[in-house]
Amino acid sequence: MSLKYFQLNWKKIIFFLVGGLMLCLAVYHDAELYHQPIGEVIQVKSLKKTSVTDNFNNHDVSQEQRLKVKILNGKSRNHIIYLKNNFSTSEAASLAYHSGEQLFLKLHQHQSKNQSVIITGLKRDTMMVFLCWLTIFLLSIIVGIQSYRMLFSIILNLVLFFLAIKIDVITDAQNVIFIFAILAIAFLAITEFLVFGKGRQFLVCFSATFLGTGISLIIAITVLLLTHENGLNFEMMSYVTQERLPLYLAGCIIGSLGAVMDLATDITSGLFILAEKNPTMTFKDFWHSGQNIGKTVLGSLINVLLLIFISSVFPLAVLFIRNGNNWNYLFPMLLSLGIVQSLISGIGIALTIPLTSTLTGLVLRKEVSHE
Image (cartoon, rainbow, N blue to C red; front, side, top):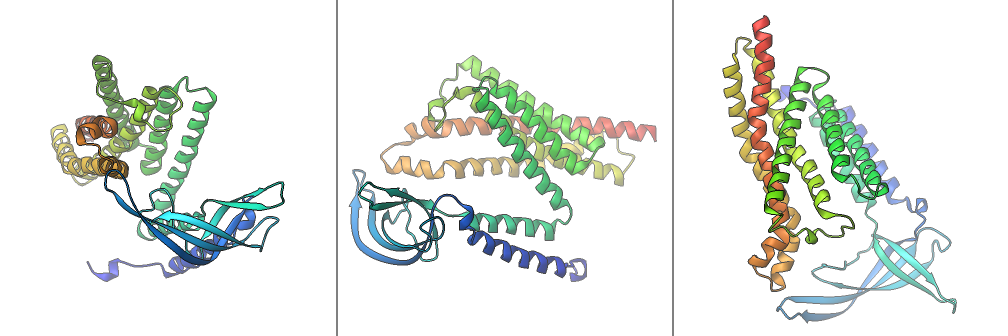
């Protein structure tokens, strides 16, 4: 491709770079905005190391650090304190701290007027802001004005998601599936409207995604009822304080929706572009073209689902195996729920190809016949 077709808006790039640098600096020095005490590590001294071996012959090294910390906010601002930090080199349950890092602290005042300090965590807001800024910067440069629609849909969907969780908590989890089904419809409508606008493409993609997700969920619920959920250990859903099955199905709705919506959007966009270039296409042409687009995307999309699932369970899977568990125990206790959820999404994906091809073909064939 000739370089003349690839033009950069240098004013926009400079604006984003300067703005991003100022934003990161502002967040790094925002300790006064926190009520919780924050300290900056200004000096680190490494102390003794101890080799550790557990019952399963896993080797690790425990090390102690002496930290010189300057408190950045609150009544003790600018005070210098010295802390000890014990961590393992694997950093499985503890971290090694370095100069320049900022820490959340907990100050305890005892009756003897002595003060003890506990490190509660690492302050990561600067890194989070930097990553968000980098994402927005790249989207703005590469995608252009469409990126702002995407970001708006993400922010709006996140607000709705937190609102749904709040409603779930307030109602004591009485209507979990209903709440998240409505949330999924809202996600779908907002995202597709911002992608396609108000028109036939929106209606086709919305309908195909809704049907694909809905039918796959109905199939999943039917199979779970017929098999009495045999082989699925819902008790392995960590930190759940409400009925697990409805919450699991709610997660399946959201997970399946994302994959199905992606595929439906690809097929719908491709077929509408084909219709513009070749207005004499018949329903059969649209059907076969939709099938071909779906088959092309299907493999990569299913692999994306698989890789996302693998990445989510990989640390725990390694931990299970290193602690003497075998694959026969690992699969039902750790992998089964995620695999079933991926299968539900896979069913939705498979159904979406003929559904989207059929709906798009009917709409566009009708337009051709009127012409």
